[in-house]
Length: 217
Ligand SMILES: Nc1ncnc2c1ncn2[C@@H]1O[C@H](COP(=O)(O)OP(=O)(O)OP(=O)(O)O)[C@@H](O)[C@H]1O
Image (cartoon, rainbow, N blue to C red; front, side):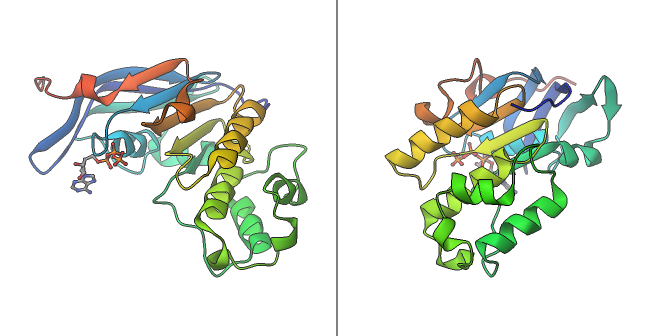
């Protein structure tokens, strides 16, 4: 459990379109620390698009997103420092070894207090592969690594897009243990359409509820 101070994300009338197609509209929603949220919807419904808006890498076409950290407003450009993200479209550096990848990641994000690089390798059960190149990892090993890097970064926000893609049933149990161990107290946001990835999330946001809405001026 981290001692991260409180962080809040406010969506005010947020909508996003690509060309002439509105993906979602009129989202008014508040995300706060100590809670977990599932963003739900079918393939192509707009879950990743909303996550990208929430993490500041994509702007809304309409409406406003604001953040507060310890009660102070923070700029969208600064939100990245406060979040960890594991997603299929975020690539690992294939020419690094596991050791190098972990060192590289933690140049940019602080490690959870009381956690070491060795702990992460043990958590991954990859002690014999510390010097193996990432490009030789299986897709499941790569996914575990992405998750471990995100969960073990000391950030107030944890964002996971399709967290169990490429994981077998053992990997799914391992992911659920990570949630138990490392998500408490943080603001966790999970994009998913698989129940085992998000059934513990108290709050659920259905993208379908924000489609076919009139665009307010
Ligand atoms: N840069 C872009 N330009 C044009 N259309 C885009 C762009 N990014 C996403 N889209 C479209 O927006 C819609 C939502 O895509 P998004 O990836 O957010 O869905 P998703 O719910 O995360 O899907 P999945 O479950 O398959 O990952 C899709 O129709 C997609 O084609």
